[in-house]
Image 1 (cartoon, rainbow, N blue to C red):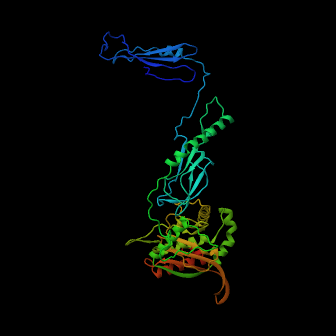
Image 2 (image 1 turned 45 degrees about the vertical axis):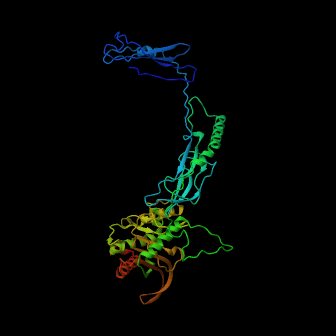
Image 3 (image 1 turned 45 degrees about the horizontal axis):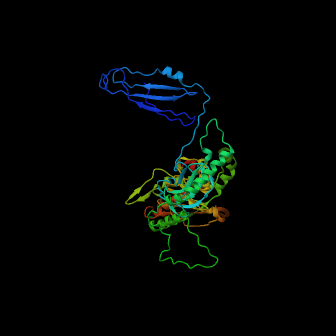
Length: 473
């Protein structure tokens, strides 16, 4: 059965008129039909070439009775068969349809807000889809705010230095005219492009005032900022002097400062030292570095040897891999080694997952990949979350000796230092040996001195004689 159709065709100058005519169905002379139902006839006029029309009369009829409908075959024969008709596709959009908003993305479960560090685009600049518009600096990483659509930056509704949360609007973008739908029979010309551009500019000028009034982000009550935002009474404000410049601390730097100070206030930190003869590990590297690089595609460094030594030491002293949680001790059944990496923006600590299950090549590849991401600023929060033990290599900067600070919520950290040739007594002879000082800072509330010394001694034994790793002794 044909349904009731109503259409209006604007192009071609032919109007399609749908009108509803109440008539008798012819089934009964009674105004309510034989079954007491009112039947309604509906007439639809369809256009055809010339001045002719096709009239379709539809009688819904009464329930259970026959329906008088014009044959579909006859109607089809009356419809135009000319395939030269053109189809027009036009994108309809309201005021909101041409405007999209760039908002702060989800930054991770442990990150609730961030600081708008910089804008990469400005009003009037063209952006492509997923092109970064701004950078949000969090406590751990820098996150890009990408454009959801291709278009032109109309307005920036946030300011550099603002504290923003996921979902906060930072920019308004006008959709690009290049992405409008074009009919198959039409081809976009330079004239049309100029017209579209002029329309966009006109729309931008008309909407500039209301957008600036309505879309400005409402001020939300901010939570009290952590320490280091203002000088405490014990830290007097220094008067300004010539040849000085005051720069606000980055969010990452403030976070590092807060965590390190919390670590110092919470843990009962104690550091024990030892020295390692690097002769055998250096010889191992010299003998096999070319073959190692050729097979695995990565250079053999000292860090993988110390990671394997730390894994062996953690397995022999599980308490160092544990952590205090309230009145309980949590023993971790996994070994995730955090590697401290210094970047231009601050210190980050990516994690080598399940280091006890990796070989030298896998450890070196993991360290190189994470270090590259950290320096490029593309490392994710998940790649820095967790970790049960940290290794910090200050020797690459020339440090001879230091006392590293524990990375919360871990319980210990190993500090590596520079390799220096020193006179050593070996077999009753004074010889020159490449020596490295190592330091272990640990939480004395959990780890006793005996465990700490034995842990560091195990690292010394494995590094000085890597064959122990093969024999597991």
